[in-house]
Image 1 (tube, rainbow, N blue to C red):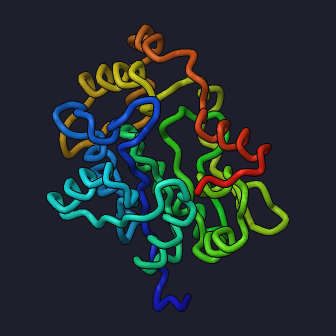
Image 2: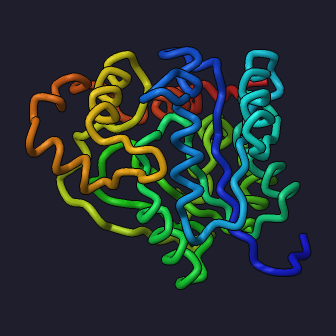
Length: 259
């Protein structure tokens, strides 16, 4: 696809039909929906040309489209289960040369870290570049070259490769130039994402203490809070990380792709 100039587009995947916590992306958090916090934080980034919410064409996600329309945020609707296709179609529609993958269940993402990842991606002319190593779950940020996303869209067949955007690219370093930003050590046990009710209670506690509209707190602010109040970590301990992806890997073994 011809590009007139490089465009870095953040595509936020969002749906209401989460199995563990339905409707989580529009749940209230410090007086605003979770999705609002994600968008507001991305709007603080200096490296993004566009922000797009990529939801599904299922009727359950009409509420997400209405929220986007009310707040003048770009909304793309696509396949509910084939998230790779949804991302590719959204990236093509918005003429992205670099696609920043963000999930709508990460309201504590750090704009400065997103910018670092995007800068690292462009500096190395990567196909894939993301936050790597032992970082808190909820700071996730990955960038894909459109050319790599297009190839994955054409060639990927396994459930884990279609229900998730990155595996086809990430797992084949012989085909793609991949890299990562290693910024944290020994923090992979921390959960700042929203998958279960326990996560919601944790995030409510964090936002109650740190949220200031227009001034998003940083990852270091959360770490400092947990240093002062370590008992907060107990609110959502012992939850399996990336459980959805693990389920997709199990589906790979049945050689079945969801319709």
